[in-house]
Length: 369
Image 1 (cartoon, rainbow, N blue to C red):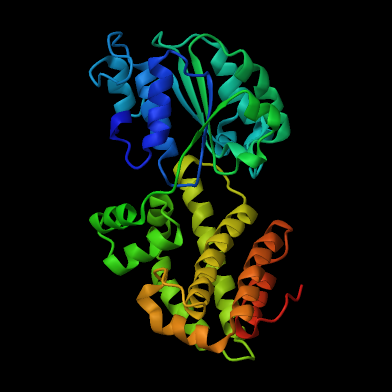
Image 2: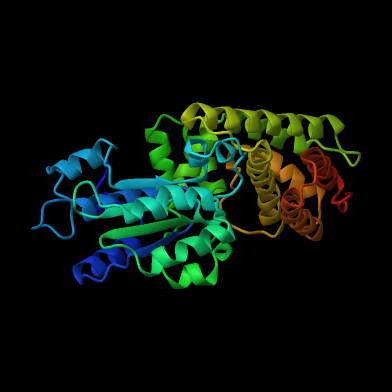
């Protein structure tokens, strides 16, 4: 487990935390805001180690020698609590356990945060609660949490990790200090991916398409999506005005496979039942992002931009698409991709979404829903 002074590429966020600790003004409620996979949870865990450290003489760094530090390093500290929607699978109420969780509900927040926060800490140095995907908290859950955020028991620190702070209630935001996390430098992400054994071309692609999210890059690579991406781009470059019915069906099948794998992995990890609908949305969102990057590259070429291509490993295929459409048509296609994602959250069947993707990519035609 890394320490706070080992957090890389998030200098401002770490500096804000250190300054607050040095002045003994670290709030009891924090929001770590920023994209997925840029070190928010890692930083929260490192901060928790400092706060729970039993070495009184060190206020800004964990000693890594006391019992609390050793337990944090082992991932087994009784006063460090991760709170996430899948904890519903361990709720004492069988109805809650059997519920397919798409949001972080009041049952989880009450049972795994508010109630434990009121109990004495095991090691006497307070408690730290880290809420993952805090934007998924229901309004009832957020309202239930307000009093604890406003008047927490002594020594309790609550860190909300969120990639969409606009989904949090104003009352939640007002009771926490916002710490912003940025996307990581592309070269840094590429280097880390290569060091992990990923080929350079693939590493550069994931770094670019995620905008600099190391966590998302690792996850998407682990799903085997790079080979899928290369095949899809070649198919898109060869699309005629009539489209390709088989491509739409294949994209639908790819999403179903990814979603099933995600649900199974969730079940293996902690016994929880992830919503298949949510898994489909996540998988479709990732595939839409990959596909849209092709047309963003094509527009850059069409406009004479000198920015590096996201799909530099298949520049010839991107060039073929850029030559087939005008700049206005490429802009229209890219605009449609934003609408495709909206369709998902309106519960439009994902096969319909992919049929529309293929039609649009073939002819820049409008949506047909």
